[in-house]
Amino acid sequence: MNRHRSAFEVADAVRRGEASAADVVALSLSAIEDVGGGPGGSINAYTQIFHERALEQARGIDARIASGDGAGLALAGVPVAIKDNICTSTGRTTAGSRFLEQYRSPFAATAVQRLIASGAVIVGKTNMDEFGMGSSGEHSAFGPTRNPHDPARVPGGSSGGSAASVGAGMTPLALGSDTGGSIRQPAAHCGVVGLKPTYGRVSRWGLIAYASSLDVIGPIAGDVRDAALALEVIAGADPHDATCSSRQAPSLVGSLDEPVDRLRVGIVQLSGEGNHPAVVEAHRRAADRLADAGAELVEVELPNVDHAVSAYYVVAPAEASSNLARYDGVRYGRRAELAPGDGIHDLFIKSRCEGFGEEVKRRIMLGTYVLSAGYADRYYLKALKARRVIKQGYDAAFDEAGGVHALLVPTTPGPAFKIGEKSGDPLSMYLEDVYTVGVNLAGLPAVSLPAGQAEVDGSRLPVGVQLVGKAFDESTLLRVARTLESSMAGVLA
Image (cartoon, rainbow, N blue to C red):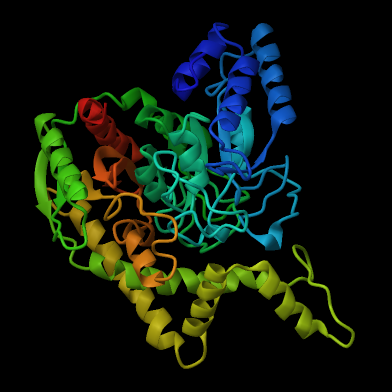
């Protein structure tokens, strides 16, 4: 079986008995090795690979299908990669950090359990920016992940390993997490589809927290249909997660090909400043293709979105400061060796200095500062007010009379940059999130999909566009995305 077949095609072939899950998984494991996706390889997309466990799981799927018990397995035999901040009961869950280098979760995240119940086979854990804090895939304790289109460049972050796995054909599906663009941004840089669901659509139980009011688990896939299929599987209420909506999991795949000629798509006008010409062209082309498909285009202004990066980099670090306080070298995780005479305070300091990377330390210090006495009102509370205003801006675009059904914006300001290019300039790195963080602040669903290519230093690098939808309306969002994807096939060939 071709390793570039979609998850939908793989599952259908396995259910029909036209392919065995064991052969499919063996091909995926071979692909990881061939392209250097394993730990320390040329792409370095994985922190761990579950060779024997994955094959054992696949043989179990084949046995179920042979006994006539496989009809309901939506992802029968599909190899799936899991971002290493999502708990699995197999292997370690490190969050890309030395602090959790040896941590083994006693349970699997709800999203992972639902994948396994659907017949998916977990082949490994993917590399990531430590604790999800990064926009490039460089901030991992286990070395940077590299872009499969040009290994000298970043894959995006923080779900860089998951996007690289799908982009290089190692797996047809992967799970990532998105706090400020960490699914969509690497999807754009690796030329794949990244879907951030509505906040509360997918359970966060088993996701190692970065910023709890922003974090979302979602799929990265080769096409929109696979992303929709994966979301159908992992979405839905969960009693373990109080922030998870009680709404019924949506039916998405069946409505993907419905026409969009009655839908209005808001086109967010770009200033052009700071945007690569290929991004501007991809955005324009995508708008034209949607118009050709019958969608009504409406110019939309989101005047407060410019403040989203500033608000995000107060709110997210503040929540991270609180969430990461649990890593103290006492209860679990890395514990530093103490010198004679050292006390508990020394244990905290040494463990955190050894366990956390530079970017995580930077964000913890920033978050602690904006929460400190005398500064919380000036920074944190003001950022929360800005967050509310940003959400109101999105709501107005969707809810006012004649409001739009989706918004079209770029995913990133430019194609993937070179590894190390922005490492010494955190502000420049943070501005990579300019088009993604507002969606998280507003809790809305969004999907990034390939929309063009940029010629940079002899490399052809993917460029993505992003569609943003109304809360809990992934069905309409993915219909528009599927139409756009279909119309772009010739451009991306």
